[in-house]
Length: 386
Image (cartoon, rainbow, N blue to C red):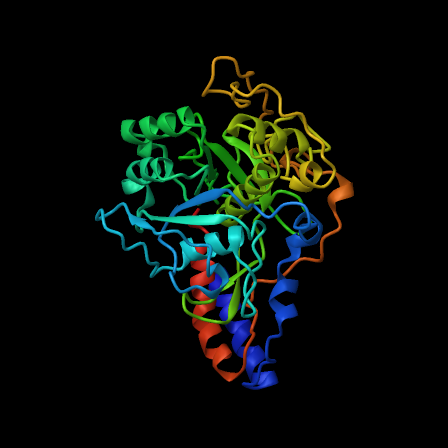
């Protein structure tokens, strides 16, 4: 029986036992599902920095222009597929990423990690890499300091236009984050744009703050962030929330972490922001650093924002290999399937809540059961997208 089928069978049984009435969601319900906000000390960080003054471009499926959690935070968007101004989102993926970065939590919604940041929606369509080069150049030319690319494609997509666009963004002092992929428990294929020099590849950790079994690993992984059991809308225009996971949300939280640090230190360059992200990350307790599973560790912007730690170093030296001749060489360990080699993070960070199941969260009344039953399939399908 497939994972999706098992989930739907359990959901049907749950409905049969408890009936069609689900509890009404309160403002605390959705916030409590965002388990990662507690170990990341989000509430405390927001007293120091919110991401204000930083524009994050979300290159994705677009963003819902009427999303209540993003009201006042959306800049005019661009559609890189048809060169229009219509960056609306019919898919929901791009909106979820934008919410994780800059959501305000209004109307019982998602609390973003950097709610003061501005979001520049750049629509790249369903096949993201096709229009990614154009989208990236547009984002850089229109003021983005951080570009979030929560998608992954095989290395055949590493064509010259995309590599050229990354070099252009890098030369303009723009930080680019991309998902490493969700095939760590499968073929573990190398993917783009995460593997391109000048792009920060992001892996995913779960609620135990250890790398998930499906997070694609390799030398392209520079950082990790929470990416499992992340709440998202069951449908793009739904008020119910389902469980989702992947390196997509992990990438969004890494981008938001950079936005927090940059808003606290607006005079720093992209190289300095990234160097502090790398140096303050929660390092693996076993194996070499960088690890092929979590890179330099899980992002911990609180170390820079609250504790004021982290040496920014030289402004003009890129701290990762490949994009700069002055950058150090990688020393990642060989792949391994053992738990210790898969990037076990420090015990001091393990203050998160317990693990979640494969079922969607049902919030909002009778209609929620119907919506979630369909939304569960949508969320599980989406898990393997980036």
